[in-house]
Image (cartoon, rainbow, N blue to C red; front, side, top):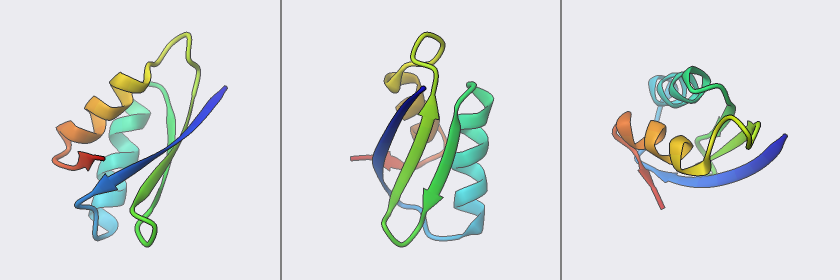
Length: 66
């Protein structure tokens, strides 16, 4: 398993957390959003999910990965 932390702009509430964590779960990874730190910690199997796919899943929810 690979672990990464992505800085994400635009998250501010519980809905944001559910939206991002749900989108990442749909592509087969696990995410933990930290609203205070404005980041998302993601655990994933690099043979099944790419970092690019994770970023796209977050951005499709309307947030910016920086």
